Length: 165
Image 1: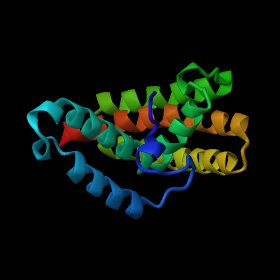
Image 2: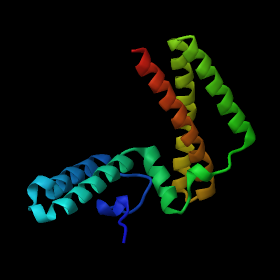
Image 3: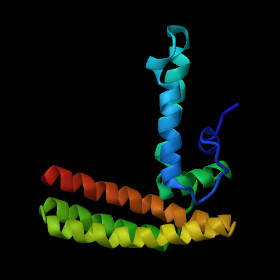
Image 4: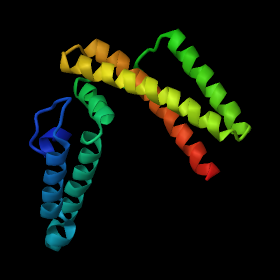
């Protein structure tokens, strides 16, 4: 039986998580299951538990990842969501602008595009979280699928910025 990320920390699946309490529980469980604190015969199990803890806290402390995970628990794969053509065209146009700015080594333009998409992503995430809180899974799925695209865009902006540094 697979234990979900929420269950690892004794939490009920929810959009909202008390992150400081999560971090405290993570530290407690990390110490309890640390491979150096168990015998050699239990080390593999401790490593597996520590790996699960690390992945779970990474997901649960981040509102977007937590929302994606909640949809995953509902059986929804955001990677397979059909997106409206006008949205895809808009993202493609923004990516083309980003590529031009990258080629021109125009870091201010890269940052401006990142800021614009970041703002739009924040709005879509807020919309998705609100829909999840209301139990409106289709609306949440639509908003959070857009956030996935925006996240990839912002990752590319970050990579450009790092390579320019």
